[in-house]
Length: 205
Image (cartoon, rainbow, N blue to C red; front, side):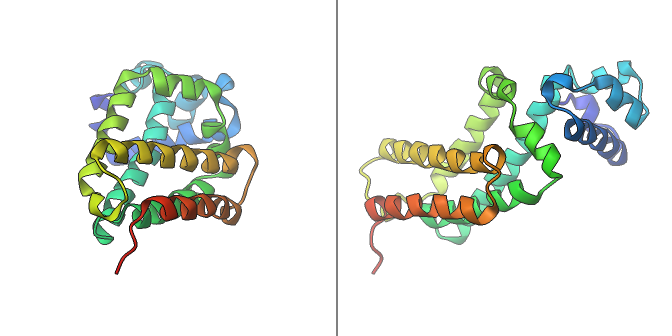
């Protein structure tokens, strides 16, 4: 993840560095990513760059976390708008996430960022990233109205949440692995969501 030094830079310089990074990721897969190309493109010294990022793993973790943060922020908003209705918020957030993952940034950038097995090893092994992810998930739980669900305890809801996340990730992967379009990804997920709703959502009077 970037250092505090990076976040103290003027916003225009931060944007220039990130744009150079995105261009390099769009150009080549993770294994061939060149920090030399980035510093040349944005006009900074190697020493300055390493004051902002420790290595290229830091760069990729940061970019993934920006996508994740946007999705969790949307989830919070949808839970508030729906009065804590978990399934309504999940559907709305999934639609938002799929649209963003299909169209935000270039296709080459998104493919090289997410289709990267080394990245997933980093995600699980990087304690700071893992803790940040856990904290964002924990912030969602108090916003869910458990009385709208056919469950008996918060622990059961956590199990249900885990099942839903696995299905979300599996269907989203189709964007990058199978080149599925937005409509196909939504159709695949909404079929599963309908079954989960039938089993776990209480009927509203």
